[in-house]
Length: 588
Image (cartoon, rainbow, N blue to C red; front, side, top):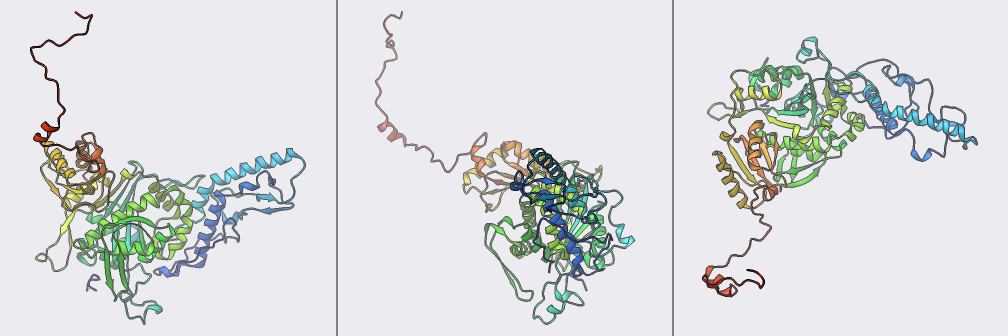
């Protein structure tokens, strides 16, 4: 039968001091297949790293400078942020001394006070400069890997060359393009052989902390430091494809039959040979904790979302409009698929959410929270990325500009009931090849056909509540040779800047439309009309463009009927055409 038919460890609040000695041994405390087996030793490593990073960025209270001497002496002093040499990997030079801040009265000699102050400030600067390296190396290896890959499974991933710089006095950087397969997992108690004891007597199918079930969401994310682009390809869970050991079935079953390695091989085959470098698996509990740790995400909920399933205790209740979603609400938003487009509609909303997440939560200031975030979600996450690589990827994402974030969806179409009994997303291999060549580095083939922008199918969604904007927009597009034009339902979020969405990834067609209009911004994402090549979401900038359309907020001038114009027009002195115009005196 097809599978489709069927407590995070607390973070120590203390900041600024690291205690305890490292054993110097490297080990992976995870059991082979149990994500719940994250040990206290692993959690302690995250906590120590978080404290060390906080200490490195804030080593001395500013108020103490000038009132207390800062030096390297031991008498009458208290250690600040004392880090044992054993706690720091050999990649960083081990200190031979401990930094102290004196609590004794200031010495009478100003000379020695200034010498001590200068030395102390130099050490503080060095420690701050080393903060990135400390963050990268204090957790070594792959502490977030829940299960070890066999030698054969490891071949599914391209690990021949490093993806990030080594450990030095700054945060690690990406050295080459990296493709990461992300699997969002949801597992119910009824889907595992030995459910946790606390779920066995419940009268509903509880969500359990496991990573061995169907992948509810699948993404291939490309981080490309050469083009400075972050590309996200959404892979619908119902995509019909070949999965080794299961035959032709839904793509989301690959994780059940062979874990992340089989999922990676299945995706590589589907995409025409695109290599996958790393993988990340996270379950719904981890997503909830992650969003809470990042402080929530502000998202426009495009419609009222209401769904109730007592058998799973799944309750979704979100109102339409822009709002800050916490972890539990974010999971509701991401899981909702109970509308006309089903799973494809959910994919579109997930892309909206991911763009908001990248723009709001993944900022340079977030990097200092990395150990805290990882400690919160460690038991719900499985990846063959080490922490150094994770930080390099997060840093790249945080510095990527909005236009360089590309959101794509696997090209395809819905199956019909006459084709298959089950519901599938049928991939379009020709369009897939074109996307892989443009965005994922596959070599171009002679079969690739250039698209003529004016033949693109364009759908218009109006957010201005003024239909005159659409009428004049259509005239302008038709005048410039566009003929496949359609008007969709209004966009529910008021926009200031018009969005020109390259629905299928054809950025050239979208850019040609933008140049024709003279306003708007081009976004590569699959949140527009499914049947369009380009979706235009009109914003209020349409009224202020180089060839502006009338602004509805400004009342047009009153035009009087001709009869009233004659009556109300001021009387003018009649001048005979034959009469000479009077000239001032003195002129000839």
